[in-house]
Length: 98
Image (cartoon, rainbow, N blue to C red; front, side):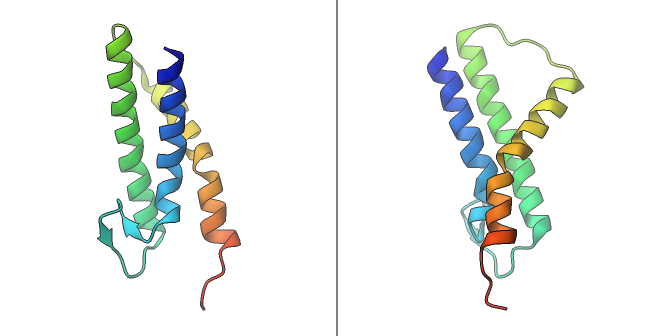
């Protein structure tokens, strides 16, 4: 049980920072100019994928509990907090060639 929680947190932190660290969309399609909208779209897709991974882990260890909207708002806020280091690196620390 503890290992699955640690794995989930590590995957969530990596997934939250991935959109800001790469120039490609989802690690597949290279984009010439990846603007903030692409980052938000990729962040939403990765949030959903991490949520599905968490549901899979929960289903393997116990019955899945039904969740209300408050749960999803809280986990989204936590996912955005996890994404903060990548956001800061992308928009504040990295020097651009402009």
